Image (cartoon, rainbow, N blue to C red):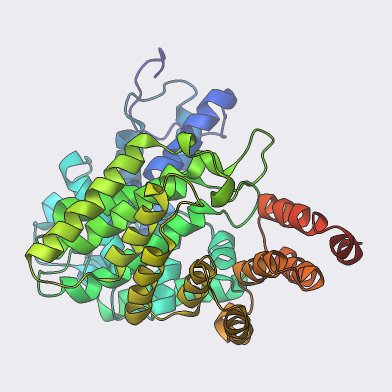
Length: 447
């Protein structure tokens, strides 16, 4: 990576000396790639989420001071060891070790092993799994699980968590704080659940990883995508696939397939001028072949496993199949819409959310002989759903459908609403262009 001498994770003290753009970029990249790993390893020492978070943040600050003179060969090892040493020093100085350990202690390695100041690389995947499961513990409220996982595993700021969940910053902060207090107060252990606990715990965790990937697929602000978030979600799903037994693993494999198929389209969603390109207009030769092939192979293997075992496909499998049908079509117009609608109906039986109803409706609108009055009535019903009140993709979908059906004034109104709700600059630019492309109706409403 660099010809600078190797450094050890000691505190050089003094002010931060960024050392130029190269070191700053290295630290930023280490934060994107390894935040959850550094944090999870530190939690194993402190058994305290707040303290571990502070120590991990301090390790990144020390990297900004130390790396200008000596960039480590393995940044994640340096950061992990630094955070653990900071934690141990703090615990010793404040005599917190004896008081904090019982709060989250689990049966397992003796104190000396847990409190070692050297990072053990073999524990890192398990540490991240432990962190994910503690964030998604059933004792926590569902909305708190999502917020805490996005904050600690995803590394999002509280402001980004709030924007992703469509809630005020104070609400997101309160959910995260409540979750941490609950974990400490209830003595929730820092461990991977037992096989008997897995089915209940896994569904929540997979859902949260899906939310994390979605937050990366369309960023809450600025650029269209955050590849670091989609990468973290994929990496976490791979950890689960490697750790889970049959047949529980099928749900995790299906989620991984879905994430890979979604990521495969990433580059094709932006044209050379930085404008959003919808799936119907994407250059399919730009879809990432490795992700596409692995995703399709995975979902095929899951379907085979389910069929062989005489089981019904779960929600994550159905979602991955829907993504696979889209990706497997030679072109958008050649999509197997009847088959796609059948799978959406299967998804609605398993997960009847307003968002799924909207997506199923859009798929049905592509069927030959689709009944427009019925679709319009269903759209009107969805517009009354409180859960979709601030969901920008509802008015965006309404606008697209009304434009196709010739109601240009209605489409312009819907585009305006979508522009108002969207927080992503690239999406807003796209929506304005679509509205302005309506001709007179678009110009009247956009003026």
